[in-house]
Length: 382
Image (cartoon, rainbow, N blue to C red):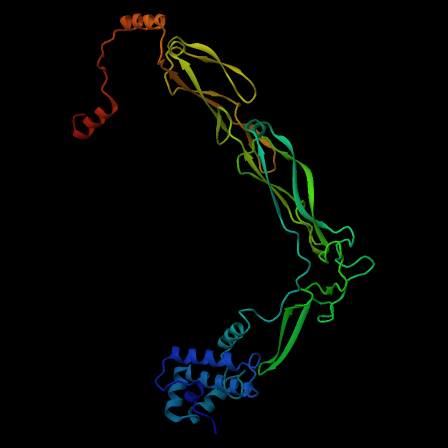
């Protein structure tokens, strides 16, 4: 005689739909034939699904509450694809499958030899080297193919053998019979790690890994225009891969040292240049440094502190992604007028004469200042 569906799921007759669903999931995980050791797991799992199919449907549940099993047996049998006269909610069952197997669908993929790891090397260059480009010799360590076993990991004169656990496939296949048919799961072979072969007599030079860490020296080209923190990729110059797999890459991280008086903003070079009061007042032709050498700059009379002069094409090269350059930025010269703090008697006398000729008393400005004009605007006086 069929058991009461409420007793099967362990819920009260007034249980909500959420309570019914939670009870079903808990029992389905417990008695799924692929995970349960209970000898009656398949029968119980079928009974749990049958109860859930009825109690999760409002119409079927109402008929069951009124007429018992007689109220649902006929109706349930009319659906194609059911199991034992009851439709199965495949969406909920597959959800249980995923939960039971750690969220992974059946089947797996063989893990072949791993690609080599990436290697990072930090390189420092001067500001001038960053502007012109430079070739640097770098030293670092990386994993290289063992020269004794040629990367196989096996002792000289021997070879890896086929893994007896997976017969060389790299996978372990497990098949279970369930009420839905044969269920096959594939997992990576734990013995060979998915390689399909094992080393029974390891190479003494590399301890069976097939690779050894070695020091390396190589020359690298730092292109003109690099900025601090730029990462240059050198493909295939990282660690060697396992058993002939692709090598990793080498990443060269550039650090640009500070310059004595140049600074950088994007591709422009900034230079602060100091003039004395006579040069600023009378004008002058001065010599300023650039990364290409000294150039002459004409300073007009009456130059004030903060005045900027732009030297076209005297900045940093504009670096493209492929390492080539496309034009250059500018050099911007910002002027500061130096006020002397110590004067000789002769200089003091000259400044006093200048003060007399210019007038030492403060003259009010004929034009109102910016903030005064803004105050008038908002007060309605303009």
